[in-house]
Amino acid sequence: MLYYFLIYLNFKSFTIFRLYKLLKGVDFVIKQKFFRELQNLVNTIETKQGAVIEEAAKMISEAIASGKAIHFYDTGHMLDSELISRAGGLMAYKPLRVHFDVQNEVRNRVEDKSKNRNMEGLMQFALKKSNAQPGDVIVVGSVSGKGVLPVDIALKCNIHW
Image (cartoon, rainbow, N blue to C red; front, side, top):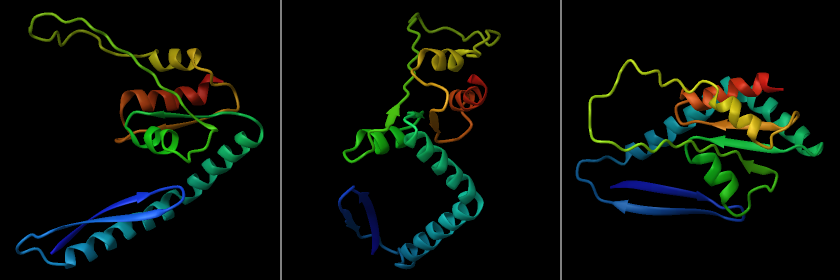
C-alpha cells in the first residue's frame, strides 16, 4: 500500500489529509524514502541558504518596523497564493503584478526567427510604474529561478534606487 499525503498548513491548524491508493508491487519503504529525501533537501537548504534566509528576514522585519512595504513579484503561484491571498497572511505583504499582453491573432504562418523579441526595459518600466519606493523590499518568486522576467526585476531592484 502506498500512502499519498496532502499537507495543508492553515494559520490556526495543521491538518493532514490522507488519500490511500492500493498499488500492486509497491513497497511501503517508498514512503520512508520520500521523507528521508525531503529531510535531506531541508537540511541542504538550511546549510547552504540559512544565512541568506536570515538576512532576508532581517531586511523584511526592518522594513516593516520602519513603515516600508513588502512587495511580492511571483511568476508562479506559490508566493502570491500562499502568502497573500490566503486568510491569515500579513497585511504588510502586497503583490506586485505585472501584466503584459500582446494580442495580434493572424493566420498560422512560419515564425520570423530573426525578429528581436527581447523585452529589455519591461521590468524597469514596471518598477517605475509601481508604488515601490526606496527602502521597500521586493521578494521575487520563480519556479525555475532563471526566467527572463524574474531575473530582470531582481537585477533592476538592485540598481533602481
